[in-house]
Image 1: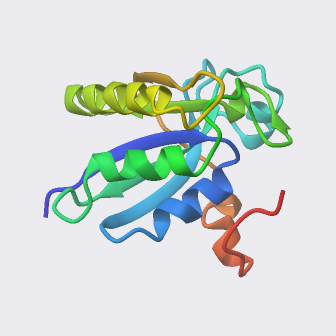
Image 2 (image 1 turned 90 degrees about the vertical axis):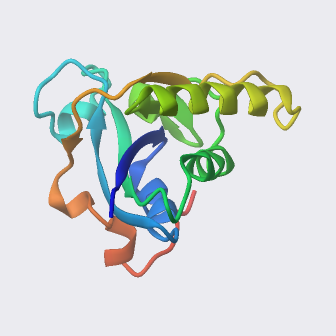
Image 3 (image 1 turned 180 degrees about the vertical axis):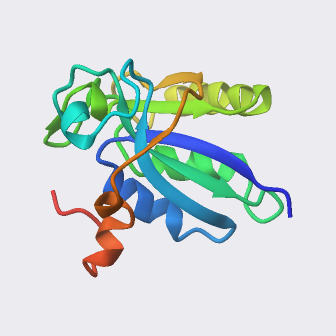
Length: 158
């Protein structure tokens, strides 16, 4: 089986991970930090909003079972891509909406998907989601992995 990776930032990573983890064709998920300037950042580092990292979910998936376009649809459906550096009550660059692509095909698909969602009229404000090459993924501390599942929850309460 050939797998691929996809990396998404859509606010607090706990709920984002749970959403992707439960999709058929997703092999594994991990929460962590990407897109910043500090090597091996900790949660405390990222929470200062000074490292430039986003809280992200790295998704390993089987493209024969779930298409990257389907993952993009889930991404758009599970956060507000029109709020700059925030999701709900969470504010800071670590909560930004971002797609980190792992191939030129993913880049093209993400750009087309963003344009489609922006033109759809679904949102009253413009989509501010960033699309960038996948940088180093720094896996978050173990207590953050499958955080909601460990607590018997299926989503974050806002």
